[in-house]
Length: 541
Image 1 (tube, one colour):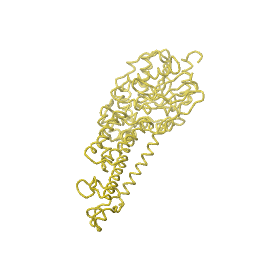
Image 2 (image 1 turned 30 degrees about the horizontal axis):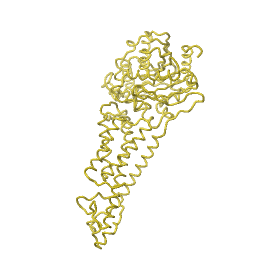
Image 3 (image 1 turned 180 degrees about the vertical axis):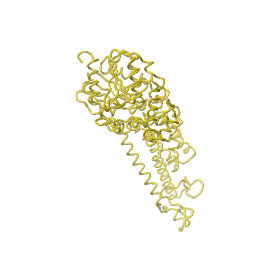
Image 4 (image 1 turned 180 degrees about the horizontal axis):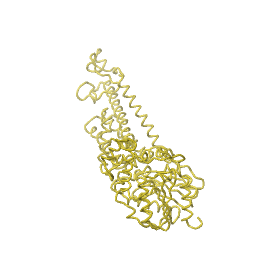
């Protein structure tokens, strides 16, 4: 790489590169890369921008300056977004998680290559300039970049001989006079030079490992004679991730909508509901902002219940066309059940039956009941700090995720139950990530997507009450709960169920299960779905 004189233009270009790239990233992947190609592309372009900034500036200062300028530009470009991963850091468990999985992961794929690139770019430029200066000195011509001390001297490079008491002006002025001007400077390797080189080398090795890790693709095991694929479906201008698995491509299609906004349950479906594949074509959707639908999140202002329903209907229409079926089964869990039941109400002609698991009815009332139960549990079990914190907050609703954090983080403890024989244990959210259907990057996005999606959408749903909004459905309805569901939720469900009008309706309560009953007791749950198929499927199916 030829040397570039360190002029004002060079410095300006060295500054503009990271800034422009930061603005592009803030528009292109504002929450960080979602897929393998995005991640590898971010690494390679960031490395190139850092390399160019270091080469143009010929200064080690480009190592911290280029990443800082880039980060400031990204933050400026994504100011329109909302969510824990892009908001100001928050000192709480959820806040630390959001910081690591948001800015931390994003920085690993952009700031790290910028730093490494700047280090090597500056080193190459200084080394090239030093060789040219020595060659011109040997030929007896003035150097383009004066080698003498003072204004205009190029930055010292590793291996340059610094001035000393014995050799105050540098090479060529010591004993021996003019003859020494033609003698190469004696190279020294101070400890700090070797430490710096070693640190940059270690960072480069880390960058290589990270790049290889995020490049590894996801996969799903093939099914002989059936369908098994990880694909995407377009909804408007968004691409939504979808897993399709079934032993018979002509079997009825069952679409599953996961719970929290921005959540992914592909791992849970693969680990606990694999037997469904023998009876249905199971389509598991990653909702907008989830692991396989990460890029579909922005902008936050368009993330609404209506947009979620539109996404679900777009996927349903894709499945109807793909498998040539007039109607599909819809199964939804927890928060996803609000989307599911609304889609069924608005478009009943597309569905054979609706299965709501942990069906949400009225979030405001459910949260108030959960709040009272959690405060009582905290006082009963000696958790005085939690009781004080909740009492100071007062009953929900709250404005953001962090205010809800004490309730959410303590739900498992406050409503714990015996899990002997359960397929999914208390650590299910972690163990479900160990499936090959997720890339390494998608595993990190499972939690990050939930935090951001929940923070944006959940407050919008506080005024929705199915007892008021949806009193009649035109398809068969099956509602499933665990016997250990949060009590306030069960009370609301029974109230709605009592007034609901539908061609057929049934409420099933599974023993030994809680809010995630479909994953905790998959055997009885699958038996129920087979009965749903028998009772509502077309003749001969």
